[in-house]
Image (cartoon, rainbow, N blue to C red; front, side, top):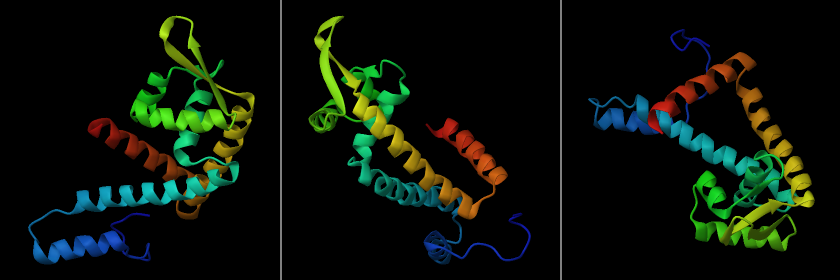
Amino acid sequence: MDTKTPGPGPARDAVDAITDQWAAVRPDLDTVPMAVFGRIYRLANAMGDRVSRAYAPHGVARGEFDVLATLRRSGEPYTLSPRELSATLMITTGGMTGRLDRLEKAGLLSRSPDPNDRRGLRVTLSERGRELVDRAVADGLAEQRAALEAALDAEEAERLAGLLRKLLATTA
C-alpha cells in the first residue's frame, strides 16, 4: 500500500504511542528512526518467541537449535570447531560449552579430538541431530511464513527483505 494515500491501514501500535509521546514533548525530533528500529526490535522478539515455540516440541531451545542449524548448514560432514560455532553464533566459548554439553548428552552431536590440532575439538552433528534440525527448521520457517503471509504479499515480502538487507549492510 502507498503510505501517502489515505485509507485503511494497519492499526496504530505501541511504537506509534511512543513516537507520539516524543512528538508532544520534543516536536523538534525526527522519530522515524525510532519507529523503524523499534518495530524491527519488537518484531524480532515476537518472531523469536514464535519460532522458539515451534522448536520446543522437538526438545530444543532456540540457542540449541542455532548450534544444530549451524552444523547442518555447514554441509557434510556437518563438523565445525567450537571456536567456529562461537564465532558464527556470536556467543562466548563458555556459553557454547554449555550448549554443546546439553546437545551431546541428548545424542544430537558428538565432540572428538581435532586430528590437526592436539588441543582442539571437532563438533559433529549426529544423524539424530540432523533429522531433528531438519524437522525443526521446517516448523520454524512455517511460523515465519505464516507471519509474512498474514501481512504481506510475496512482492512486499521480497521488497522488505531487500530493504532490510540494504539497511543491515550499512549498520553492521
